[in-house]
Length: 131
Image (cartoon, rainbow, N blue to C red; front, side, top):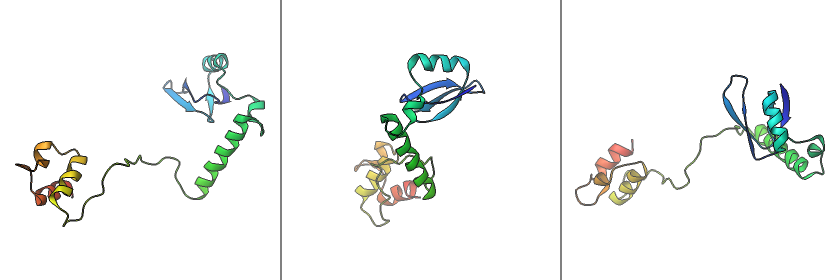
């Protein structure tokens, strides 16, 4: 096994458990012989010169390490749940039926439930999708 820092955007390799994994640019990973040989052919690994400050990759790598440390020091977790920016906030209980229908639709409500004619009432939508 050899420890290598990935220079490409991503590089897949087999973990010790035999499962395919993907390392992203700047990650340092333990690799088997076959993955090292393949990575060297592809130019996937950062050289000592690449890691020195003043090189393009070295400056990027140093900045990323500083950002990760600052985030860790600030208590920001390395992994966070994805946020859907277009998801509307839950309307107030007294909001209009149209607001509740739009919210229910964003939660996957069928068109029959959100339709103005024959759909659920505001209170029904609020009860079903607002809980």
